[in-house]
Length: 123
Ligand SMILES: Cc1cc2nc3c(=O)[nH]c(=O)nc-3n(C[C@H](O)[C@H](O)[C@H](O)COP(=O)(O)O)c2cc1C
Image (tube, rainbow, N blue to C red; front, top):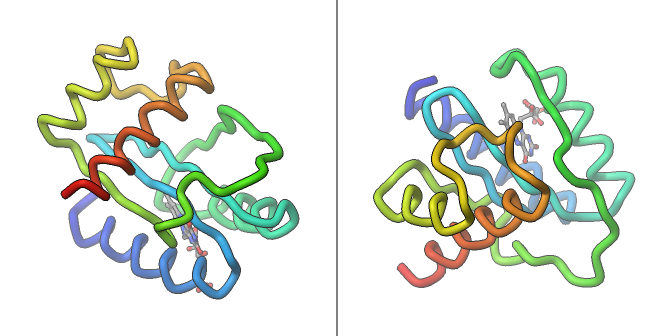
């Protein structure tokens, strides 16, 4: 996956998500994505099905699905954090040595994405 491929995904996501009241956070390293989607349940479900059929990935798995009172990633139509020193520091701070999202607990996935979103807002 090239930087251009990621930029294309983000451009589409940000465009569509704004119109649909969706927000979230996306991270990517080497061969895996980890993404949080927040919004109305039916809209999130619909988008999930669309992303599931996207040929730009081979496999998709839901790590956690829950009702929330307030969006956590409300500042971003779709925030993005590529791998960086801080990315790896954050990964180890939530108790992980490698970016293999299928191995993350729901809590680790949330803490990692939340940490990335806070790095974005402080930069
Ligand atoms: C990892 C990944 C994350 C994506 N995230 C979103 C997203 O948050 N919102 C979105 O509309 N499309 C997202 N897409 C793209 C969708 O799969 C799909 O291409 C898009 O919704 C189609 O939009 P269009 O009909 O406007 O072209 C994502 C794709 C990938 C591979």
